[in-house]
Image (cartoon, rainbow, N blue to C red):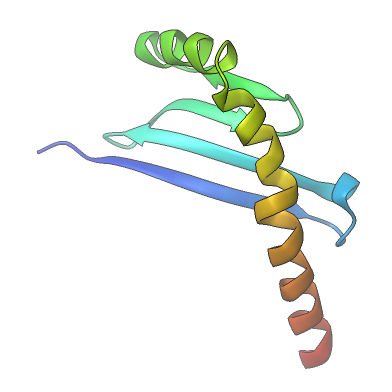
Amino acid sequence: GFLHYVVTDCEFNSSKLNDIEYTESYYYNKLEIIRFSSSVGKSVGYTEVGIKNAERLNNGPEVIARRAQKESYCLSNVGIDVESALTKS
């Protein structure tokens, strides 16, 4: 069989928006084929299929939605994680 999965990640040093990086990576059979990074601001392909899809995603409305994920997905969750860690330390 074949395995396809997506890993979404928020890396942060503080709860400030500038200190957060949002990434969304697509894998096929344990090989990363494409990644969106908020620090780059677009998708980057790592395979032939990934490069073609990155070009399509970067020229469509999807790139705007992914750029907004940093604020809508990460910012609220990072605040919860930071508060939770500080109250337990």
